[in-house]
Length: 397
Ligand SMILES: [Zn+2]
Image 1: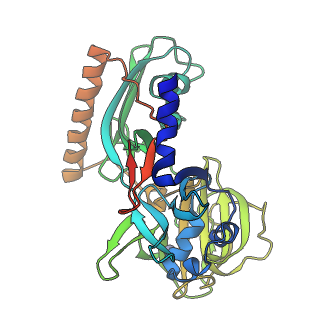
Image 2: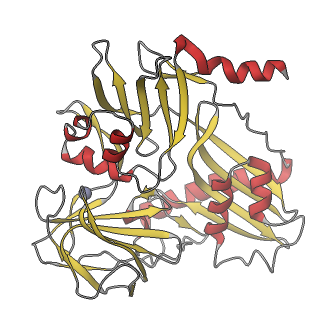
């Protein structure tokens, strides 16, 4: 017991400074945060437009860290903007605050889960891995194909092949599932992730039913989605957590899918912005509008293709365009990955690629079904990390 306490306390008091983990407040703007912590507002105003906009996408309850000296001076703050990049505020030896966008260091491992149903897939996956994200991803993947409540019996096996990021010994970010299967009364249902990032069944038919359509007619994409890109000219890391469509001011913006408007207002970075919550848990965002369609307000119900507003360049925008975002909770995802796509099955080279992916995953499925390996429990370290004062790097113990 004494040893455990020591382990917990030791790293928190290095160099006379203390690491204080905290969660990002939902709805708090970056400026309000700086104000509240008595940090210079210039940190925000010195950022360029793109980075200023990114501060509006700091995920709800993001795990942030602050290094505070024994004299209660903030020496460093780390705020993740997504799973690849973070904002680092730090005090220089000349006692001035500076801010950078730096990459988040994490490691990625391939993992496989084999388990047999005891109660329900969600509970059993959670019990074996401790990952709520993996459990809900699995359930979402098979939704509409398999009736988990009705059809499944205790003892039915399931296998998931996935990539998991780790940071400081803990699960970090969404698991990337490359394939999964469940056998119900001896009948196998399997999904395979193709090179396009979408999921297909064994016949190559699209597994997830995506209902979304592009929000602009004759869309011309001017900037794509990226969580982390090194800008060779600016010598810095950038991110663009949406897709930009170039269009004339006044061009109609259409609801990408049916849903309910959960935000219709102004934000300093995104300007006149509408957010729509859809029934599958995703939220779409339409930024830099010139104006909203009359009658569209918070709470409005919209159908797919309804006009919701008009292209403009409000907020921090370099010219008229639509910035279109898609969020799973508060995590931005690539909107193009969930747009409706016509598939009449694969042909030619694409078919060969798919067959190779399918065979590889089938081999893993079959092997796990034969060996029935028990899941190794993830070592769950406490927050035993510290921030090196010289290099400003977060280190694990
Ligand atoms: Zn954009």
